Amino acid sequence: MPQRAATPEVRLEYMTSEAVESGAYDKAILPVGATEFHGPHLPFGTDSIGAETIAEAIARELGNTLVLPPITYGVSHHHLAWSWTVSVRPDTLTYMIRDIGESLIANDIRKLMILTAHDGNRAPAEGAARLLHQEHGIAVALMDGWQGRARRALSGTQWDIDEDHGGQSELSIVLYGAPETARPELATPEPRQNMDVPVEVVGEFAGTVPKGFSGDATAASAEEGEAICRAAVDLVVPFLRDLERNGWKRGGFMSKIYE
Ligand SMILES: [Zn+2]
Image 1 (tube, rainbow, N blue to C red):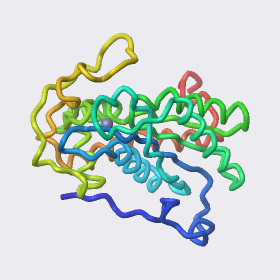
Image 2 (image 1 turned 120 degrees about the vertical axis):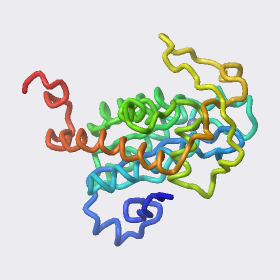
Image 3 (image 1 turned 90 degrees about the vertical axis):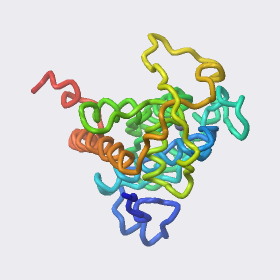
Image 4 (image 1 turned 90 degrees about the horizontal axis):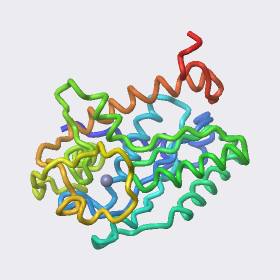
């Protein structure tokens, strides 16, 4: 069973001052997760585990990149119908991300990628990103969610992943990133959720899917989790290298109009 490499060398919370100072870090990734019910087979920190697993893989491949301690609470009011979901307000999350970003300036880090793995975090993260850029000139890249991107990248391969909450792909990433927290024997095959609604509707998740989780988690595997992680790295790292060459500024390399 593949297991992610232990990479304390990129995780600030596991590093000593000497290790950080000798690392020549000039950019950081902030994983943002959530604490919410994902079914009996997955831990409450599923979204945080997904965000930090992918952040670590990207940082390792990119180099000179520090992974900040994850924010493990997100905007999960729409999941409060299930016990032990713990949520913060959108404004709270925006302020937290903004405060964290401002703290980096004193350490000469002005390039930040925010990697969120939960739908409620998207807007607060974007708000914080825009404030950090407008008020301090910090360059901020935002990766919101990994499931849709990984699903498109892996289509046509042996990995046909879902975008479900508590489904196949989330169990796969946990089996890869933190297998000791998963209970795959409790997974049940549930229908996949249609993700292609034309507008986003803000409100309770209860009633959207019968049990509060969906997708066939019985089909999950650590191998699939590794493939998801690899797909995210292959997609994001070349783009971040182009961004780096452009001084972490938007530019023609994105539109490709100038080539
Ligand atoms: Zn989730």
